Amino acid sequence: MRQFWRTVTGKMLLFLSCGVCGILFAATILGSVVMVETDFYTREEKAIREEVFNGLLSREGRSLTWKLENDSLSEEEAQGSTGNLTWQIVGMDGKVKAGVKDSKEKWQYTEYYEVYENEEGVWTYPVYDTHVKTSQDQKYDIVHFNIDESLAKQDAFFIAGKVVHILYGIRYTIYIIMAFAFVLGLISFVTLMNVTGRRTGSTELYTGPLYGIPADLLTVIIGTCWLVMSMAVLSMVNSNIADFMLAGGLVLIIGNTFLGYCMSIAARVKGKTLWKNTLIYKGLYLLKKICKGSLYILMEIPVIWKVILGAGILSFLEFFGIIAFSYDTGNLVAFWLLEKAVIFPIVFYGALMIKKLQKGAAALAEGELAYQIDTKPMRGDFKKQGEDLNSIASGMSLAVEKQLKSERMKTELITNVSHDIKTPLTSIINYADLIGKEPCENEKITEYAEVLVRQSVRLKRLIEDLVEASKASTGNLEVCLQPCVASVFLIQADGEYEEKLQKADLTLVVQQPDSEIRILADGRRMWRVFDNLMNNICKYAQPGTRVYLILEEKEKKAVITFKNTSRDALNISEEELMERFVRGDSSRNTEGNGLGLSIARSLTELQKGTLSIKIDGDLFKAVLEFQVIE
Figure (cartoon, one colour):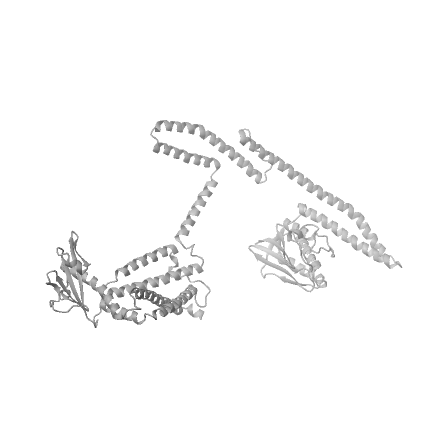
């Protein structure tokens, strides 16, 4: 059913339902108010109709007397007959002035009017009977009326009679009709707003023909039209049926434009453009752009020109104030010139010194630690600030040199100690291996020799990793970047680790695009990164699970992702896991020294790439990113 309401036919039915229910609800509200005011519930229909007719006759009599006094009665009116009404106008002397000439006719209604004349013309006003009898010096007209009981002709009395008859017949059921119109109209309106902008079989939003008009401008246009038409409707409450029908047509137009306006607003709300599609927003946005542009231009202006511009504007305002608001302009202008002659050189000197300080600070920020600010022309706080910046540069140079020296000494120490340790360690490994191979009746000696060889090899690997980690972190490793096909490393990892993954009961899933992705990398260093990450997977992944090795291109970058499920709970942050000598298994039951990820990250950064670690529960993910080359 919802799809049907989204069709053109469904929307038209909803639109029509809203219009009919709205008119019906407004009519029942108006009718109920009229019935309460005229006491429909305690009086008979005839008495109510008589009261309504009296009101119409009072207005009709005033119109006729005014036309009589201004000689504007039509031929039909001069004969005393208009619609269902016959009438006669009599003067204070009892003579018939207009209308039916037979004064012996029995009249149903009589109205009295005072005739008043001034510079603007002749006017008539309804008055009471007693006032006529006691004011013989004033001019009066008496109007007698008869109304055709059959109401055969269509005029104001015909309409009033029909309306009274209908309202009297539904004086109790009108509230049921009112409630029904309200509920049905509300449901139709909500449904119409819900399907506005939607079409059957499409998820796109249809904004409608009024979308091009800004929301606030549309509101002003529609509101103005409503106001004009409402005033026209009020002015058309007249005695002829044509005006009555025209007023009803205007009411229909007001209702239809209201629904169309609501549909346009609903479409804007759904598209989240109600505020942005307004003249106010566009004006504020333009003002913001102008302010930002002006600020940007101002920021780009050198400091000296900023000072000149600011001083010039301020001086102009001062001069304008002197000319506009001072009587003794001669002396004030002289003082003004003297003031500028003294202040301007000081201001420009300060601007030049600030420019020098800015230039020095910018040089330090860019790493030019040897840059020195010339403080000879500076005075006071400017000179102190310049000397402080020069001191900062010297201090930073010393700190950097000291840091580099410390790093070099650390690397040299690790390298030398490692070299000194590796020589006797190699002998230990060799002799332990020879002891294990010697025939011996005691099997324990052979077993001890195997343990000695295994742990010595592990110690040797630790020393090698430590040296490599130190060199990689200080950038002392040679890196030869060359164009490489990224998928080659995935294929190599699949082949090299096939047997090792099978022993660990892991299944490797390799995903790569059909197109070739090329990156700049050092093949030997890149493989060491893959080797460290794949070794970690074999050590720490949950047996019986799948391991994913994925290559894809995102935003001109080659992204290589290693994903596996951890065997142990990863109660550690990503940053801690990337530090040296930190391992995923806190019990340290597996082989490893906690340098693998740290070495992998350092080697990746030496190749202008990035390595990041992400942990989500037991899911471990290592992501390599390199810039793609054409």
